[in-house]
Length: 117
Length: 114
Image 1: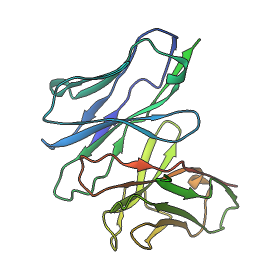
Image 2: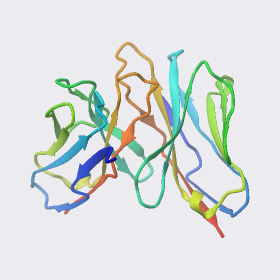
Image 3: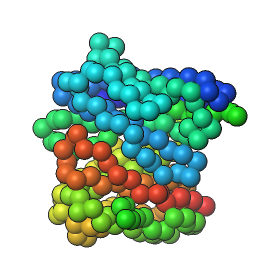
Image 4: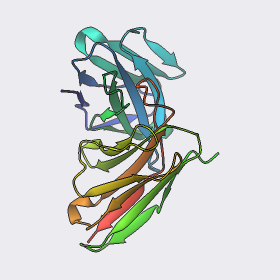
């Protein structure tokens, strides 16, 4: 069965520290997609990144980077030099490319990141 | 540039009352989804509509019904609200059912059932 686990419920750091949010997934499919979403205190969900199962290249976007390791079924998210504006709940999600191909997302429980000034 | 619009943003109901949550998207997307968000559980799929004219159950459909009114609109109905349905409800859409496309979310509806 599909499952996404974000074991870190809450993380608190001081501004300018680096922080890594963990995401571990389970799937029987060989083709799948992984996503990260950010939910700031205002409540909306903001798409951050998409990664397919055939592309294990790490990605960097400004202070954000993502490390995809198929061997350990992990898709971790690192924020470098964190800022107060990074305070949010972060969700990792999985979408399988199955015969039904409905595009459903399976979400992890979310990690609440608090960045203190 | 509205994207996905949900109404209302907040609602308080009494147990047993009925209500319809509205969702509309202006991105010409084919697929639409309803999720609920509860503390410590992430978002869970209630119902989805892969394309206009079709709807299917998600992970937690009990107590809900949906209507894909047209390509733009996808409503969620609670026929007899229960306190367990107190949650934040999100509507989302994506261009197609292709799994590689990100879903775009509305701002959510905070629903309290007393």
